[in-house]
Length: 304
Image 1: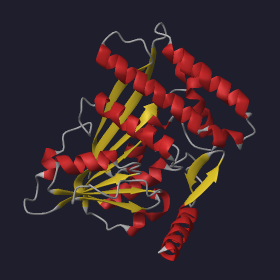
Image 2: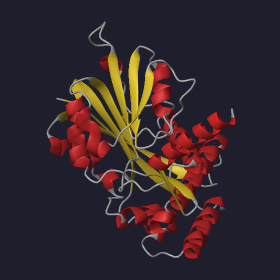
Image 3: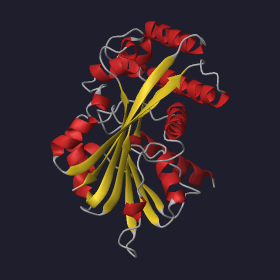
């Protein structure tokens, strides 16, 4: 009995070592050098919180535009939806539960999604958006969804073209990113320490402002729509529901900045200085006189 337990433990440890890397007190995926945010329990909690805030921004909806016309076309044909960089799987799971007649597939670098109590029409796979999309069949998905993937995408234009190849004609792409400008007060504040880390990694923290342009440049989509939502962050809204969301969003931003510490350390930053800056951000958000607003842009378009 003890031998079996030891063998199982060894196999589990071996699998974990092949999938994950551990440094600076955090756990990371081990097979992609671009995406450097952690994937441990603290990060999973942040991603779940992020999902809740984005759902609130869309008034409880999962997408920024109606999709009934897509899901109801071609009666009798099983519809398929793809969630890229699905994280904890919250979006994919909720979409599958709301649409039991649709097959939903979520892909991510890390196998961090639930493996039990999931709807029969929802599945998850480990895959790399930058390398593996060509492995999926062309012209089969009705919807491809991707959001807040700025830390994992080096070439949005190419990914958008890859997505187009996966979609059926008339299918839709949905994207979402934080909207920052280099001159905005938010971008210049320590609350956007994550954007500093992003830029140091050679990624584009300002991509939210160019999603529409990237979609247009592909020449593969029509009817592009941009939905902008202003999200409060902090302790300032007087409405109790909005205050709860604003505090949740502020906590998420603080947690994201903290998740970037290992990344910033590799660029020569001092941990004590980073911790101080992040603690000051947390104090700023607790001050009810500080009216912080963050903008989220939701982009969508229809494949030609």
